[in-house]
Length: 376
Image (cartoon, rainbow, N blue to C red; front, side):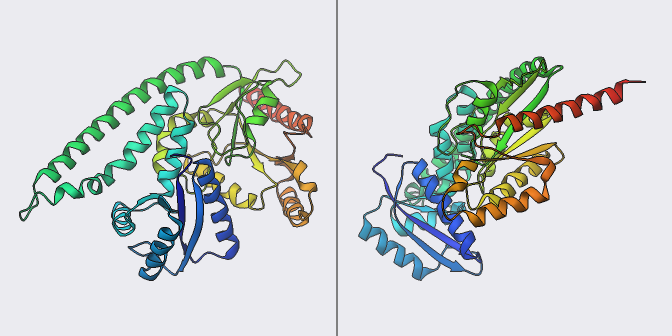
């Protein structure tokens, strides 16, 4: 996407309360900003159930008028559209329509740097595109004629589908080679080591914490999905304990299934971890919602039984006015999971020693457990 693109944001609000809707709007606006799209307006329709046309006819006409007045280049929909919905909306608005999944895929494509990262994003894009190819050739279908409309249009569609399927097959083969190579490297690396993985919502501060614990300077930044490629480093805890830590891709609400599937090989790193550090941006008013999203994705990956410590980051921002209710919500979490939570500021390096001590405690427990199994 180009910086000059202007968009109108369209949201079908299915029985969500105001707080949930505000969170949803804030997140999609952040995604648009990351994707270098200027949002000129937001249109919301409250619905009791989903519609085949996504929103009602009256709201569609209102959106079309607004898009013309604002002279926008595209409509962004904060949901994943079906291929039929996509085609219907593009035919109706006569401009490009981008759904949430396509927007996130575009952002990932701009962030991918390594060969594996580019392959993973390409795979997700191809699998997302495949069921949507029919709409790309509607202008040729009209040339076919006949009862079955078996004309040039359908021939072109089938040709494109075959090309996409062949590309998917090749990318999967290439990714399998990368996975085998990474598994070999991992098996050499994790032998007799305690392994930690950072997980969390995107932009929670994982990369900065990775830098602090490894004393490395990585490409951390205050932006969504700054890390797509897994980074691994040695943790310096002031002891002779050998410990490694890995930083993985950040999660987001309604992360596209095609992306989760494409990045499963990368996320395998989590399965071999002895400890997960769940990084939380506790200065975000919706941090509890973000915790739920991350935990659900971990459950989907079969990691719900992994040992985990909640690292509430960015506590330096809690001193700002108006954060009293946020402090109370954090206190409730502390009371609930007191043995598995630490409050830090990676930016100001507050309570980093406390985080180190918690890691050491888990290392001691892990080694003691190994001794219990090996002593006869």
